[in-house]
Image (cartoon, rainbow, N blue to C red):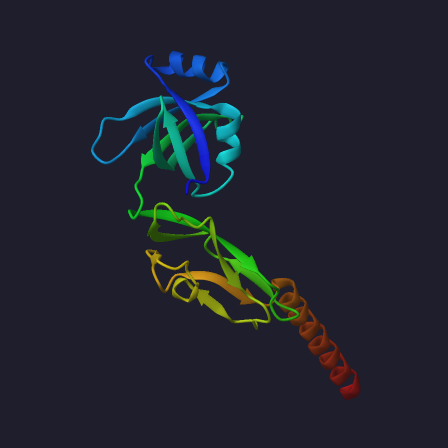
Length: 204
């Protein structure tokens, strides 16, 4: 059922110094919380965790001293310069439980010739089963004409999911490239100037 299995160890030392030592050992400090229990301070295997975090809304099976618990990622803290993972917050979940998450919007297809699309929202907020969270939702723009607007309520969600984003929020816009409009305006100005010059020459 879980996407990724990780074996964690409990941390007994806290503070910035202890966190640095954990990272020097190739591990990542983490906290596992939820369902009214005491937060569990853990150390996760660094390389495995970094690979796992490349997948949005992955379901983790965390083995803590032989006891396996399901969790999803709630927050990832990274060094702002080196982008090294400094800490991970994990939320306990159970089968059948629903949670609120953000899912990536993935655009597929090409709009009508001579048009372009603009992704107004990178993610959608939805409520979905914790043990069956989608990594992304697709928006098909194949053949759409300039002026088309796809709103949140028009995006197809996975079965069992509920939209939390404003239903009328713009997600994808299809329009003509600005360069084309500017070129057409410039051409019109040139043509108008040429016409005026011709008329003046004729009068003279």
